[in-house]
Image 1 (cartoon, rainbow, N blue to C red):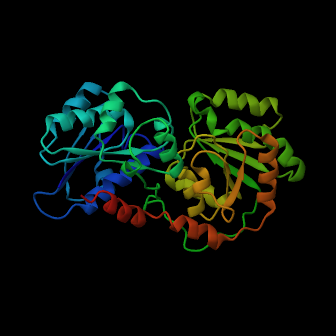
Image 2 (image 1 turned 90 degrees about the vertical axis):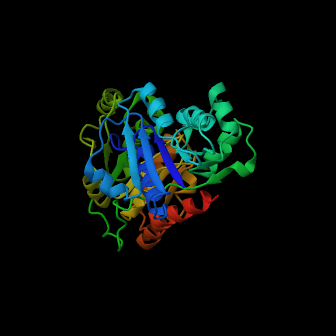
Image 3 (image 1 turned 30 degrees about the horizontal axis):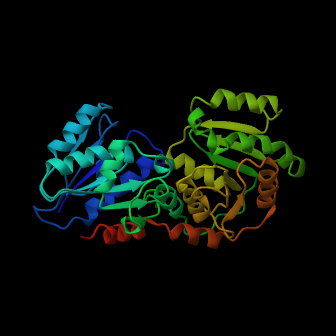
Length: 358
């Protein structure tokens, strides 16, 4: 079997979608049987280059061809059509690229394709080209039951075309073997792209909840990891709320630095309204930390009563009350780590193997 992964980006960004598509690439390579008739390739729209270290981490000898398209859509289409092979399976990493997979199927003998549905990009009405391409999709791999149900509201595909394949922890983002020690300070950590387009993440709601949290726990601090064009607005909100001494903007952190911050915090919080899954919750649990999430999107499928707290989106008082209770509670670190292990990469790979079987 010849497999081609189409991705918006793989190695030039570090958000939830590229992180998961790197795991798809890794799993597809590891699942490819040995032999000349079985090989894997990928075409990445936005990537400019691919480092040898990235390839060593996320591929095997089964990866025989790849192309990066430097944000050139025409080049992406041509590369996809050039790399198509008879009997090929295409794994389309984003719905925006589904019409390209459809074109490859029309031009190639025996080509089939699956779609990975991450979240809000499929919680909408589809374009004509997307609707036509969806008619021929073999299977839609949804990161959560919520994403599956939202997508089904907007397209007429039969139920058996959908499958839920939850996101997984990157094996290079290790799960702690033992629960960490109780944190020395009541630090709340959040991680998000700080963009106007992502205001649904609820970072401003966390800031607005801090005065009430600090009335109960005066030492409480909020650390915000991320960068983007919404940073000036959020920084102004911190100043006007009198929280300059209680809120830290940490900028971008690589995985190693992020793991250290997660181990040091007392609570991870992201009260987002529209998370398709919420990979960052798993990353916090992998370091033994409880999570606060909004009761919205796919987050309730990840965060349970044993591993965190759920609040209504946008309810500042509920966020403050839950965060205060979470900071004061003694959590079961073993239960939190067990939840993280349930989403380990080997489980994802075996489930993918089953779903991609002919």
